[in-house]
Length: 294
Image: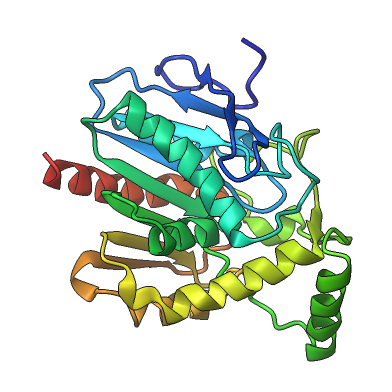
């Protein structure tokens, strides 16, 4: 098997590469199944954030694996080892249908196990839009620092120009401008991996408009979400809006939804100093939901 960016730091089995294609346009998607060494209690599909790839999420995958979850990871279109122009997607539906391709493979392999979707940042936007737009059949949804809105408000004139460019030149590319100092605080016992050849800092006009509009749509339509939800967000996130996550939580079913604010937390909570504790709490929630399905 060709090398996987995920390192094997746990006692779980080796990842199995799963070449998939998008049901939208046949684009090649890189995916992998990371089986647990324990009798599996559930399956989780993990959706990464903007400019990164599945290999930067070992701090998420490892504790889930060790708790008994088989984890499916993949590189979103325009990212990592998947096809497509770097940082580009024509619409949110392209991204959610790519997610469906991975979930369908997970269902095919483990039809008897509860299936969860876990999205971080841009992946959180994709995950919540998937849950709202598709007949999901999911046992639960985890959103980590979701990109519903940015933590800062771009000038209106920039947004107007960006939308105009997006209509005329959708693949026009700019730098996303994400620095590691804005993503997480130092002090995690296992430091975050450095940016590598599979990472990039690009975002196209069409992608930016799609993320902006689909984030607002998800907030407005959140009352339609009827599956268990855990939303985790740091109060000091400099990238995506903590207040937007609060707003989404005001519209969802309170009985089946849990909001977990992390005081002082930055964007990549799993790489923050409190990352292991945060992941322990997320894993406990997932285990509870998995046991409710048995």
